[in-house]
Length: 340
Image (cartoon, rainbow, N blue to C red; front, side):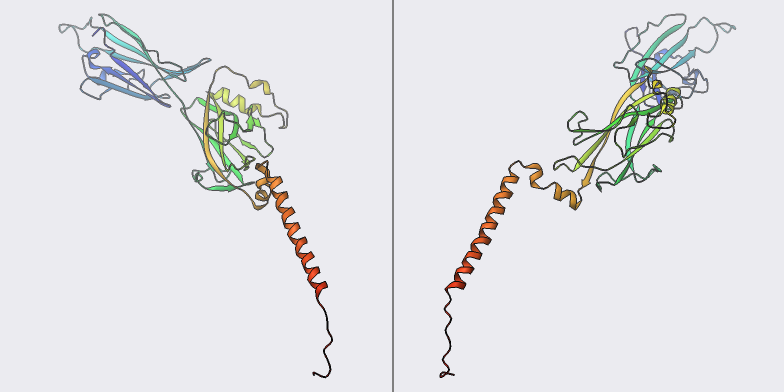
């Protein structure tokens, strides 16, 4: 018993689940609870007791540092009953401090050695925030998403939104967005749409008033030079507390009026995530196809087209010369009147 790990913590994007071996609980599972005593345990199997809570429920609190957002709660169990029918007890009670550290690089597990008296120990787990980048039909950013396989014309206005699934008190904002021709966000060529939270492209509009867990942007569709017809959109997203997220959005951009204080875009209490949407299938217009013909991509195309033009000109010239010769060789004779 002293060597076994008798607890485990599972960390999701918005909730935690804790499993405790029944060896630690000598009574009913309902006697095991979080800080909020109404959040009690259940017998999930013949050997485990399970407790689950959202990060904004059952007395769960959270803190930020320069690498993680940590959600914390305490599980308590006091052995019921008294000693020999008296009004006192000397049996131990148990307290387990549980933490979920989101965006931590490794899992840190606690250990303990049960003994008479109070048993106190800690257990931690790690997880990732749930973020998504979706394309919509209009700047209303409604529930209906766009079919990702549908093609768009160049100059069509495209609408995207980044959403965070978490709990109140946690927010996000878009730090940067860029386009590539593949799913690899680091692959060249790249085209920047947003950097430092501000537009890099003249057609980009940013929609900051969708809630602190959501932010949208739009731009006019384009194609990369060459024969590439697929475009992938990547965004680097900052996750932090809602106070930090609001201050970053309030900072605005230098081009906005009145000029904002961009110095507020500096904080160590956040984590960074990169998400992707695509491919976007681009339809080239007729004028674009004409301007992107073979000579745009093949270094020998210009020479080839020149040779073809020369051959056509020579053929036309030879035909004219032959026609002139035939016309000069014809002998005209007067028809005798007697034969009429």
